[in-house]
Image 1: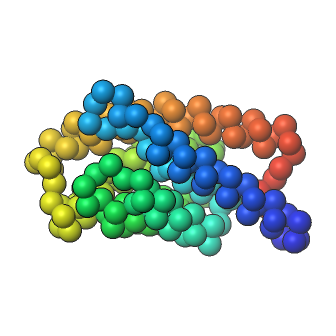
Image 2 (image 1 turned 30 degrees about the vertical axis):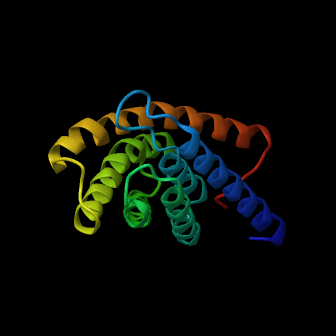
Length: 176
């Protein structure tokens, strides 16, 4: 990859991370005890667009730290970092195994649905060990994780489509 392409890739990823972190911070809980996790959705988009492990790892660490700083969950700082790091690795390796057998549109749908549920399970599991939970584990999955996954699917697909259209219009190719 030439130097110019590398700078474009890093700039694009920095912008996507910033947008994800900003949306994560300003998104209200919509009257329920959960909110869509735009940082997580953006992390999945970065994984799909870039298709490389180093970017996946760095993005997950940065987004983990940024979501830890902005978490609304008492004591959720370390669980946020653990969650983003583990979830990104699992999703990356699943996508690496399936390769090009499924389209990027299906990959993002899988990431937004299963990845968000996985992320919620990892977050709640690590939070239960490190700081405790404000309610029963299963109840939190039903009340928080599953609705958040549904919101992530809807809003994440809109974000993904907007980003892929923007990349197409600007002729930016990242994964080569």
